[in-house]
Image (cartoon, rainbow, N blue to C red):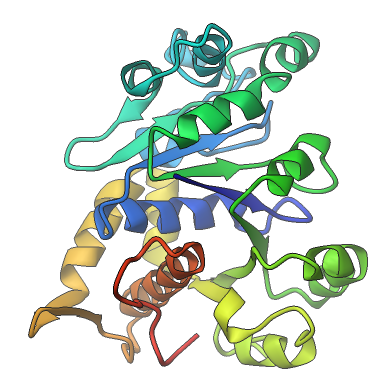
Length: 296
């Protein structure tokens, strides 16, 4: 029953891959019913790492794979007041053993048609879909995009995706810092994170302490296996296996190997910790706090 908007000031800030890993952990580990979607006309790769192909108007090889499903269909049902649990699921790609729903992007090939028929009604569709799932996770256009800021204005949580590039960080806080500082529902997420960088999360919290604090920020470390899985379009299996390998049950309490020096173990421990923080910010985890007390 919540809406999370993933946004970044520039392309290349790991926005989509951060959405993937946090959304999959929420679905597989926390058993949340997740609707994963994007509102972009082009230049997005939300679908491919999950299913091996993407909703891309320039890709003629997909051969109508997404026709009659996806964002266009969901918006159509919404405009007809017919969007319910069954119709929403029919618009999505589902995955066995998972509560994840993937809503592919538009198949519309003309920008003006997309703007008229889909963008004009997408906010209404999202508001309806929000009542049918636990979480709607939206991969929004980066930068100063009108629809993105409209979605952010009604979001329960805004995930600002950044990397450890000084120029990007300084430019972001100079242009957007004061605007976002007024909001309590902002979470800063550093992607492809390198803990050995001078711009590690602890130093970023000190340098940008007006905005970034421990409870509103997290990291998704760089991981070779995760990058390979993104390229090979099998991230769901990679995360399923990684969660199984890197967890252990001790007296009924799930713990991750948070001190692991091995790259993949560190990736999962930190990704899980950041996901827990996001859920805690949304107050979706009842009775327990899952954010780790150590690490990022």
